[in-house]
Amino acid sequence: EPVRQPHVDARILHWEQGRCNLLLDCTVPSASNVSYTWSCTGGPPGALEHQAWLYLQVHGDADPTVCCCNVS
Image (tube, rainbow, N blue to C red; front, top):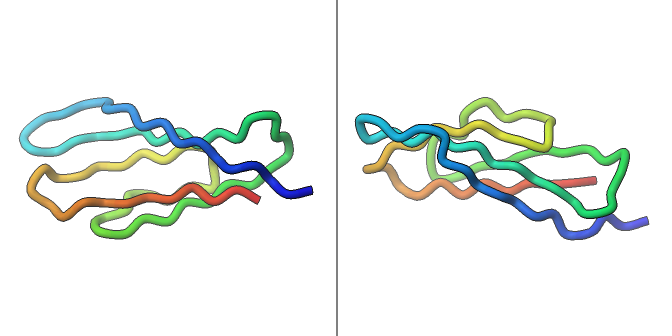
């Protein structure tokens, strides 16, 4: 059965000295027993986790960072 499109929420945890710490949270409504992977481009990806969430630190003067949550 195909997995529905995931939804990603971004939360700013802390902003200091030009650095922003973010939490990205990926959810799939009505899904159980799924696997998560993250891919990021445009900057340092942080520690990529096989979890529904990803902690990320970005610098205010860096190029944009784009992260995708993949669910299977």
